[in-house]
Image (tube, rainbow, N blue to C red; front, side):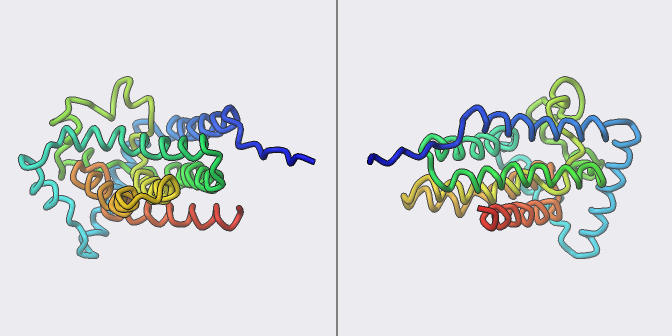
Length: 230
């Protein structure tokens, strides 16, 4: 008797999960995006910056000063806005197309970390450092894009800096890249990807060091939880 071929995940179902996760994030944005919420988010950002100063890890201003005029900030901004999502979604799409058994736990990691972060974004909304007076808003200055007003700001939550979803997804995407290919260059890219994302979000003043650390921990926890439930 011929064994029936095992079917992979439904593309429509996976798309529905992705859209549902995004809808949850927009729901949290709607709940916190108000004059009072934005003021609270700036106060929370100030608290985190003072914490970093006490811990001696407030390296972001020096990193940004060193980068301004020496690195293409426009390219870094483009990478911040699009590359992280493209890498995360792209690597998962490759695994889904292949019906790779590693797809489901990695997708659960991405969706799970996104949903878990919404709790923090709701209870502790935090403005990015670029929204404070201590940093240069490279998105506005170098790229002419205002992420905190207008139509662009409707597409995401501008006061969701802690923890860094960029870093959580970078940690997960590194695992996805390793699952996509065993080629040495891909494996090297997977190792370098999270540090590269960390550098980009710090230099562009979209996150603090503590945001990066919290996001990395969230990504690691998401991978562990998905593997346990697999």
